[in-house]
Image 1 (cartoon, rainbow, N blue to C red):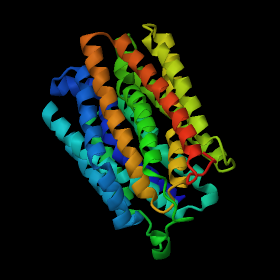
Image 2: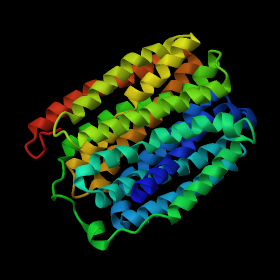
Image 3: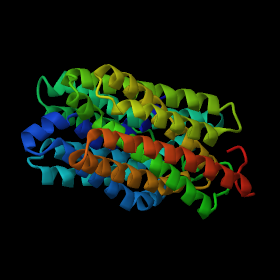
Image 4: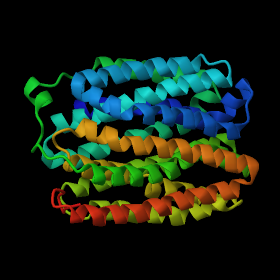
Length: 382
């Protein structure tokens, strides 16, 4: 439990800079003097920086070892959160979030490697689901930060408090035995490059939709008349449902040998359908759609990573670092395109793009699954 706890908190710390900034955009933009639609640029900088360094950070995590990589990621994320708290203009905010993207690019594969090397294979899917719940947990923290911190003592204190937690967690990371740290896992199998490229594309499309949802839900809710505090609680509730979905899928995956990517594709399809409700100008319809899309459109990454790691036991950190490149690029381009569309055309058209992203991700997931089953080197349990 301690190992899972530090992996989850460190992963959350890596994701907190961008999701906390997204949740507090109304307060941050008012003080720093920029339009909320420009949030898409800041989010894009964060994820592009992560995408540019993800492969390198995945290899670095393998080189440093799971415990050392996790500690370094936690300390770096703490420094990033403090730098955002000190930002005085939009340019500085972008620079800080760019640094945060690099920190997250290390935290993600480091945590995957740590969990894989320290958790028995019979409970690995559940462990990865718990660890992957750190991302919606970061959004949940961001949502709660609005009514509990930003509207009381100020948005900067939200980043300071989270930085302190990240630094303390980095100091508590348990060491990993040398034999476990150097173990190649269950075999020396590695998925073919073509299969890994397909998986990177599918998760990139899904991340584009999820990134828009996490970045603009609070601003979108406030725009149609919902109170700031209520919008924060709504996103926190949706994030909680996403966490519950990831954990449930991980628990059942440990007892199932097949259908993992099929489940991912189905959830993405449901997310595409639910996203249509975000086009509504009705507060009640929007409030119902947000939690549903969080659960369906953002409940699958843990199961996806389990499928990747299961077929790359020799180098789980490097493998997830590779596919994570697609995640970062999608999560960068999605919010940037959303912000531009909302600014130049309409928010309804921008929310329609989210549905398109999820639908395309669902289709590509099913195609990737069919291709993977045709490769003899890949476990047909996908």
